[in-house]
Amino acid sequence: MADLTQRDITRLYNMFSSSITNVDCGEKCGVYNANHVPFCCDIRCVIPSVYPCEWEYLKYNTDLWRPLEKNDRYEETFNKLPENQVPLICLGYQKCQRNFRSLSCRSFPFFPYIDHHGLFIGLSYYWEYQDRCWIINHLFSVTTQFRDEFVAAFQYILERSAQEYDIFYHQSIIMRRVFGRMKRAIPLISREPTQELIFYKVSPRTGRMRRADGNNFGKYGYYYFAEKLPFPDE
Ligand code: SF4
Ligand code: SF4
Image (tube, rainbow, N blue to C red; front, side, top):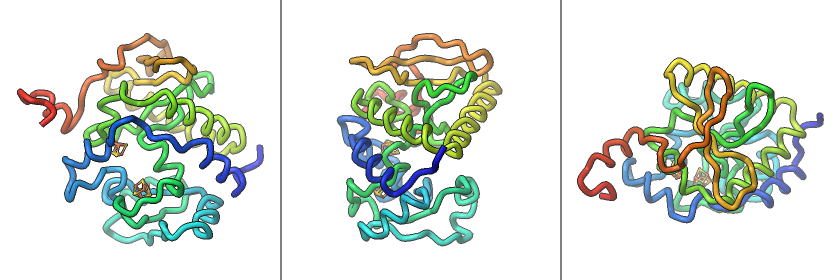
């Protein structure tokens, strides 16, 4: 399998541009963060990273991004980045340029989940953000258009890059280990191109899939406590 090129990045940006949901989820989560910054646009929470060829494309087409130097402040998050990624910092969420968002911005908080048999079966999420990300706590609000574009984009990536396939294969194994220890089923948005989203709970041990209600995945962090309030939207 060849690796990704700048031409692939242009294609991917064109095929994967829809918003994740029809509401402004940055407003929804930002209320819980300092200065109302959406968590996934806050460098203290998530360091955006791109493929080397993606950086080559971005640096000649936009002033939105610059490389992020490693320093003590971000060291812990820095060390978690995959080796093949270039860490960047953008101009900030008030100066975001939608067309030049990185693939990691577009896909957050999801990654392509790869099952026991090595198949990309749907979208699951980076669970370390479950206490902050509004989307993770409202999976039913993801649009079918986002799902379809996510699936098309990652199918394209996985078919072209063995390295990316390995990264998501191992991410899925780690998720099974972590969720197995927690005795928790893996939440999954099916990749099937249906008119409404289909959700599953996947057994981390056996891979058995049970249909699930998207409204019924539980709440975490701020959203868990907000739900307990007499007026949960406040
Ligand atoms: S994807 Fe999650 S963290 Fe990012 S803006 Fe939406 S709710 Fe906030
Ligand atoms: S490019 Fe836009 S979406 Fe990505 S981190 Fe910056 S402000 Fe957020």
